[in-house]
Length: 73
Image 1 (cartoon, rainbow, N blue to C red):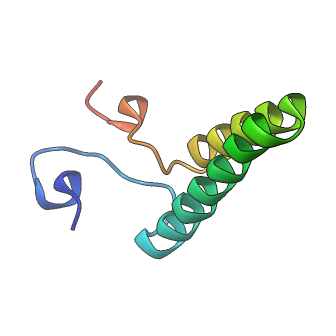
Image 2 (cartoon, rainbow, N blue to C red):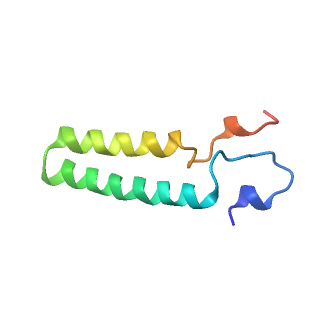
C-alpha cells in the first residue's frame, strides 16, 4: 500500500482507485519508453510528442502525487 494511504493523518484523497491508477501508470510508462525509442531511432518530433503526452495523461488522471489534492493546504 502507498505511504499516503497508510498515513491516517493526511487527508489525501485520490480521484481514481488503486487499480485504475496502476493501469494508467503502466500504460504511461510503456508510452514513455516507446516515445524514447522514437526519439532515439525514429522521428524525434513524434517521440517527443508521445513522451510528453504520456506524462501529461498520467498526471491528469492523478497518478502522480499531487500536493494540491491535500485538503489541509
